[in-house]
Image 1: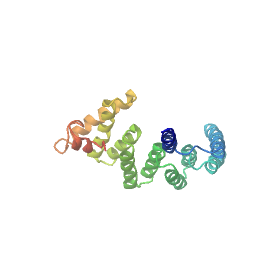
Image 2 (image 1 turned 120 degrees about the vertical axis):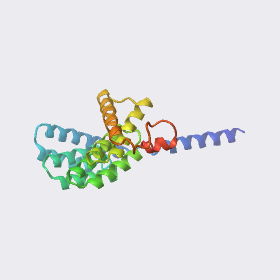
Image 3 (image 1 turned 135 degrees about the vertical axis):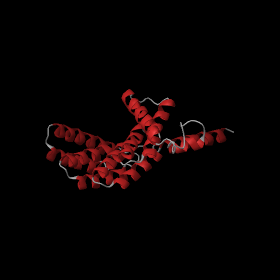
Image 4 (image 1 turned 45 degrees about the vertical axis):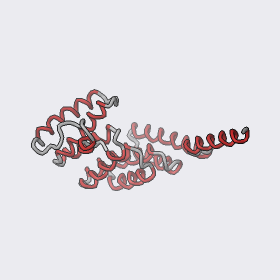
Length: 214
């Protein structure tokens, strides 16, 4: 009986450790810490207007820790400051590959694509992001803004309604963002009157899906 209890305890510990995932090694911790220092220096140089020097620090940060989203964001923003949009897009796409769960990277990727005229690709990025991160206000907000800009009223309405639904679910949203979402949803509701499939996001699975709450 004692042997059985010991085996069960060992099994439970093993399951718990597996669920937590492998702990970072000391080398990984050192690389992440070095990347963070480099990012701070890069940001300070950007703030001082020395974009050229900042580029080198952000590149070093990526070399130190390829899974750190902040370094890709910093490098892409530095390229955009220099009007090097193609280089920024290359960095952002690499960042999304290494950090697929980072919302900020994908939002900036979509904005840069839109600015370059790749409207449909930007829209596809945001649709995937909203589906993968339904609790992200930033994802729905950017999707709504871009959909509205290209005249996709129903998609924009669904995005703003998703923000309002998150607020109803208790998600803390800045008052200014909430006011913006309400105003856009009201205006878009008038524009889509007669074609709007739902009057609100409540009332069942179909309504939730049509509002983008997948």
